[in-house]
Image 1 (cartoon, helix red, strand yellow):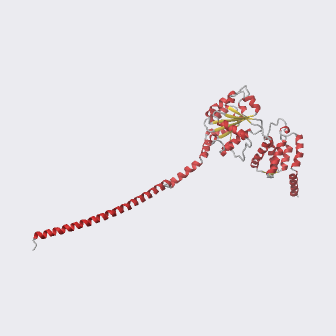
Image 2 (cartoon, one colour):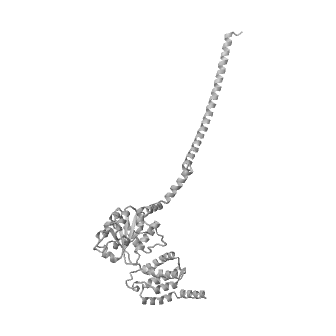
Image 3 (cartoon, rainbow, N blue to C red):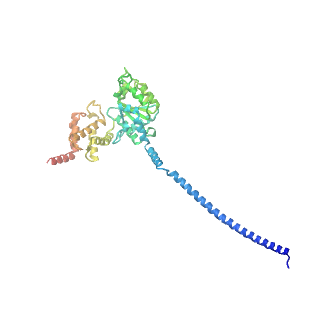
Length: 399
């Protein structure tokens, strides 16, 4: 028989064994849990990275896309405003009170509609003018005979500014053509000179060029001379205002050379009369302007048109012009061509024909009468086929 103590020891041994087994089981379960926790942790980390990626995408999307329609409109308006920056600048100039004062004394050449380049064949003179205008504290004066296209050169510069075909320093400039006759005299009710009144408003504007034709009339005759250069000196020295003058060779020698301050600030650009070939080119480039203004069309192909321009150029050469008519190439040739358009308009026709050109030559006072009679014989020979064909067509229409 086992004693009570021995039984108790056996029970203790069994319990000890069971506890050890439980510990092993617990250890196994703990290790399994750790492994599961590691796996779960990996999954959780991946999930967190995925969530972070999704949040980043959302944040980027929110940056790209405006949160509301109002912000979208603001973005569109910003884009539009960037595209219309130059237009806004131009509108601001036009709204300026000083701009309205300048318009009273002239016109905005950069605001005109140009059908073609007004300064055809004047690339050399245009380049000289641009270089002078880029020079600080310097302005230009165009000098040449009457009717050779001095004003056309300035209009050509306006045409290039419109198209952005000038150096960056001249982009955005506005060219005002001021009437020299309107600038002379005193403003009624005050003792202020008109030219000083204009200069005082020029000070309020930036990036402005002023073109004054017949600029010698503002200087005077030597007895009561206006100190023109000193009046414009404040705006010229600023560098943001440029003056372009134009005058004839005789007036330049008679009036302007005597004003040393003027000569120091204005560089001379010699404008020569166009050659025969250049004059034909100018006429070919100018007749579309007549067509647009008068609502007419010059009939015939470009080949025939060029023959017409060449004939008009030849009959208006230097020794065939009426003495002291004060017109040269291209003005004298363009005047005859414009008269041909006027004859077509007078007859209520929409096309200018060879008969209109012949009438214009026959009626002009810019050529000697004996020259006209001789040149009409040559005209009939050159354009005989066209003239006869049109005459037959006219007779057929009348029948």
